[in-house]
Image (cartoon, rainbow, N blue to C red; front, side, top):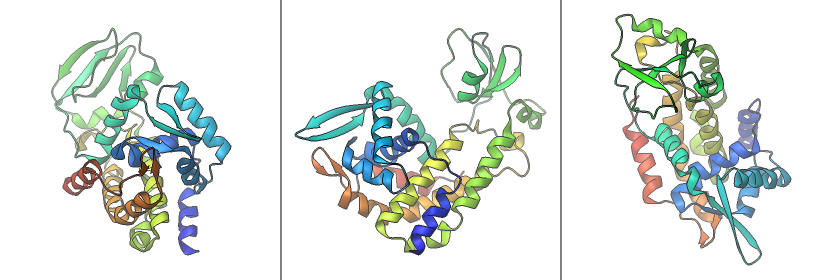
Length: 279
């Protein structure tokens, strides 16, 4: 089938990790619809992208151990919901994905001697040397033990980008654009099931790069930066795929109280926010 070939083309080179994809399913579909999903539904969805039942069960166990999911049994069925300790992380990711960009108010320059390079990258900081780091000031909480100096945009704003390895992010945006461009024409013609799978893969791929992007102001970015183009493609395809994808959710996704609703106030708010997003 042509649409299966389209999905296989998107999957090529993605190297999906089961736990990360399950997080995508919960964040995009389950959380806005009450937060509870039957394990059988999760297994069926993951099978469509080549993740086996055994990998799903192993990944779910690890997510429970990491306090990201919490299980419950009703009769012979197992259900999992988002753990309360993971709610803030999911909310932050949803804000980045679906809401308009929050402009930075200058810069945070931090002296953080206990911060490792990996922790700094995870928090999207640029490394200025030694124990000094920098990031756009969006009111983020400070790392423990860090001292912060808040500064306005410098006269030579274009030089700030040197403190990040933007080339890796730029390549990931290029890969995403190449991977999902065919959907721009085919998305409206996909079956309900394949529209949902395509939307989940779109969210998964875009989230993976967006959460690592420091979201620097335009003057600090390379002239050929593809992040804005990727953002526009994500907005357009998500809205295009959603009517069919949500029909499939309402017909096939089971929670502890029966089928999940096709739409909720939260899922509709996400679509409205994407329609209003301009950057």
